[in-house]
Amino acid sequence: MRLGRTWIAVGLLLAGPGAQAQLLPSPGGGLGQTAGVVPNLLNRVDGTLDEDGPDRLNPARLAERLTAARAARIGDLLRRHGDSIELDDRREPARRGVILLTGAKTTSIEALRGAGYGVESEALEGIELPVTRLMVPQGRSLPRALKQVRSIAPEAQASADNLYFPSGVLTMATAATLAGAGSVRGRAVGLIDGGVARHASLTGEVEQRGFVRGAPKASSHGTAVASLISGTGIVRGAAPGAPLLAADVYGDDPAGGSAFAIARALGWMAARGVPVVTVSLVGPDNPLLAGAIRLARDKGVAIVAAVGNDGPAAPPAYPASYPDVVAVTGIDGRGRLLPEAGRARHVDFAAPGADMNAARSDGGKGRVRGTSFAAPLVAGRLFAAGNIGALRIEAKPGQREFGRGVICGNCRNID
Image (cartoon, rainbow, N blue to C red; front, side, top):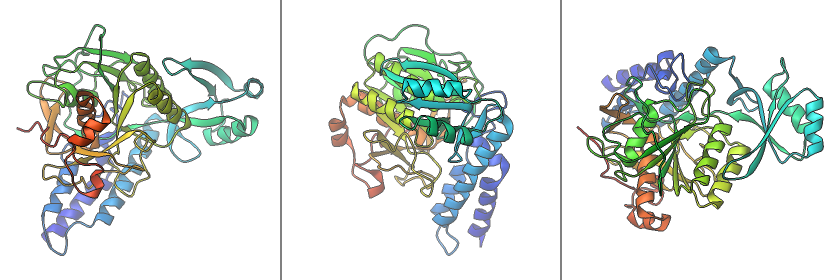
């Protein structure tokens, strides 16, 4: 019965309020500033899989715990930042009071203005995607406003400005000095995440740009992901020394990581001719984000995305589930699929996502876990390989859940 008691304890940790700290922002920051992390929580869950017997961990029970964890994470976010965040008509978190509109006629936009909506229009840099941001009249909920907007502009695509969460657990470090001060020239790997801190392992050029309030700002998650792309020295990435173009979509904005911010970041990457972009963020389907990804792909940008850590019972993760996005899952040090790995409508590759280290924002290195840290390894190898065909040849065959196989299986920074 020892294992049964272990699972009950771990289950309580997953379901308890403190467990959600692994993906929650710090009280004064946005989603990208993870704080109060429980670094080995999922490692402990995975550890129960090593044992045999009648009380061995039930995958269905794990799925229940992960579903509860996701709900609690969103609930906590709403409690702390309800002035900036609300649920849309699908019960997905979004920036409060903002609707994104594409494909609307001029007459419809004028009608919406007459109905009391604030209107801001722009074409996104690099992908020339026209977007209208509607500010919802005070006192009107987002679901109610979406219904009204769709009736006034039925020809358009209207959605909330949905939020996307980092998909990994890491040991925390204090925020540090932002990396990079100049402009990257030539080919670079694109990174859409939090800001990247200065670190001895990041010896290549790093250029950063912010797309929300308070950005760019050094973050633990962004720094860890960056090191797994281009790190050298104490953390070695999949493309050591590769230049980085980093888009901070979190900053210190409580509603950071939104579809609009990510779409603008993709436009910047396309305008700069970035061949590969990695996105270790997950959230719901969103028409604006889908359009931005399609247009960036048309410009020659390959997009690599993590499938998330909400478990196989969770809804398909986006942007990983969009067509032509390279969807990446994670494996542990024994080559097994992470039990918390989410799913996408397709999976292309697997890469290490546990039993490994990445750069910390205080200059050291620390343990990381999650599909967040598998995606940058695939992005780095894609950048080095030059094309997806070469990456497929490089992949080592594995189980069906690994897609075309394992990339960078030996790219582990272990003690």
